[in-house]
Figure 1 (cartoon, rainbow, N blue to C red):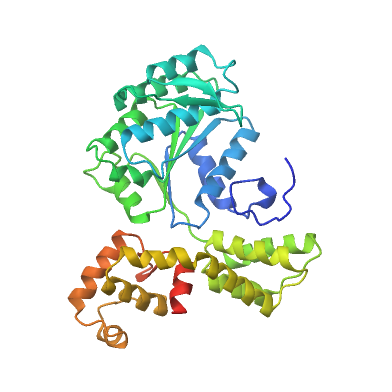
Figure 2: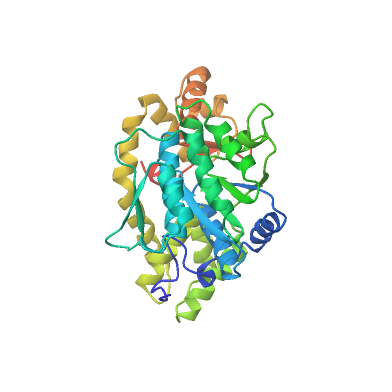
Length: 373
């Protein structure tokens, strides 16, 4: 694989050399796999959840311990959407080209009502579901499961952004996925999601289908010392310099959200052989200016009062009690009941999260932008 020009990868997974630590998390995932347990990983967005899972899959496949399939459910709106996403991912994983698809795979493709062609750009198999009525979801899950059970290697399926199924219009979505997991116990499942409270509820509430069906793990931001050493080592390898003081500023500004740390370091690395305060300020400003149009559009999704509350929370960064008179008075928010209703809506839309007994904005960049208003 070609060595990246910039060691601070912003998209996808390259190799262990460009992945920072997570040794304890990798050991935990390996233990779940070795002992045939299903797993749940939950973390707020941009903390590095997807990169960790792809790093784990790299570890399994390099050692030829398993065949791994990563399926992102973000953007799916129905069970049929999920079925298509799952079937397509498995077809691409197990079929090198349209002429090498085995009988088992072709049988699976046929049973879910799809046809296979060849992607003209990638050369990989590409499914087409046509205009025929979709196959029942339960039948699709059964067909996919039976195919996976024929694999000589253990199969690990990662369903990323799994909380998405809660929003499907079908009332039995959770039950169908749970039945799929139960019917094919030799297929290992990893369920990951970026809505921590929802993911925890799905697997810990007694009345729900997935109750106590998998081991839960909360992924937290990397320790500053570990991440700092990783960043400094890559600068040093390329005869560049970054000081502990500048690393501290980056970590404070990004609140240790992995993607934003990577983004700042990527820009610094590409700009100069030595980081300095002026350059760092320029990078911060550039990033916010790039995101400003999107952040401004979010105002259209909220009422004027919800937006006013969001700005107030951003300026405070962390608020333990948004209904306290001191907070209400400082930002002229009026009645506590109005704030409570607006706060519930901001949480529902994931603009605001409740973490470590405090309310804060989910997106650090949006918070920094609002602080400048």
